[in-house]
Length: 95
Figure 1 (cartoon, rainbow, N blue to C red):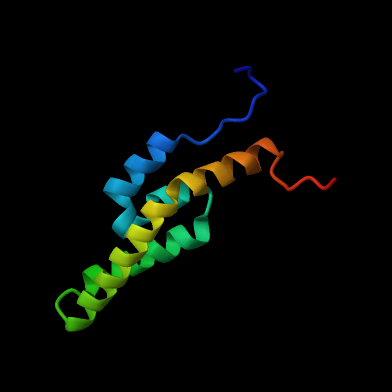
Figure 2 (figure 1 turned 30 degrees about the vertical axis):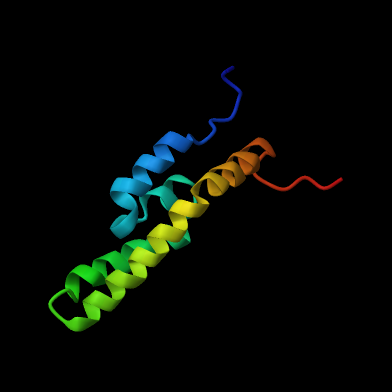
């Protein structure tokens, strides 16, 4: 790889972030430059901790768990999409 080549995202790093920090912090989303959804997951994780003493916290935790599983199913595709975005120069090239 040359100095001018773009830095592509690693699937291994994305998987490790998803496994250990994805459920409550959305770290895999932030790593893949999807700040909005990463911050939304982080906010839900924060509210899960705050509301954990109420029954509502359980429902938010269940929602986070479902999102976490769906993210695991889609993770390779998300990394491929981000790498294609990087290789296209940060925008979709038209024919």
